[in-house]
Length: 177
Image 1 (tube, rainbow, N blue to C red):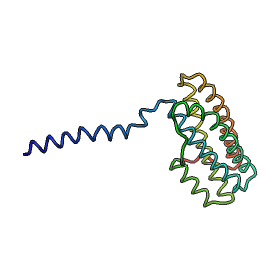
Image 2: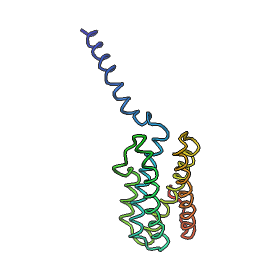
Image 3: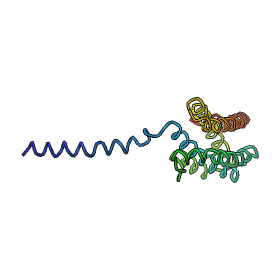
Image 4: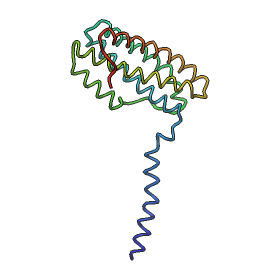
């Protein structure tokens, strides 16, 4: 009787463990290019939504203008990368990543100089990471067409990085941790 239970238990493990592992490792089966495209699309969506908020709520004209630039430039970047995502079967994001949603919620509750400082600090941190991600993808992709698009995007991100660091310095703001 005990041996029958052991066989049933072992059989169940053999059936369910691989299913659980395959669901858990779904992202591990995505290629480096697909992961980059997924992350870039999600990041672009966040930049657009946060930029829209900054263009409405910022008290500093520089911060407001930067927010507007984020909307314009990240819409363009998402449009440039969309054909590659479509080709590689990477669906467009349906929602923000939890950390970006948390930041959007936090910023919605702020106003004036508090809003400006928080937005600038978050953009400084975000563009540090984005620039590193774009550089990594340029170095690793084997797809020459994608590489050209990512190099173009890297130049835009580098420009944003320089702009937001300058705005941050003028406001005595450092990157969020």
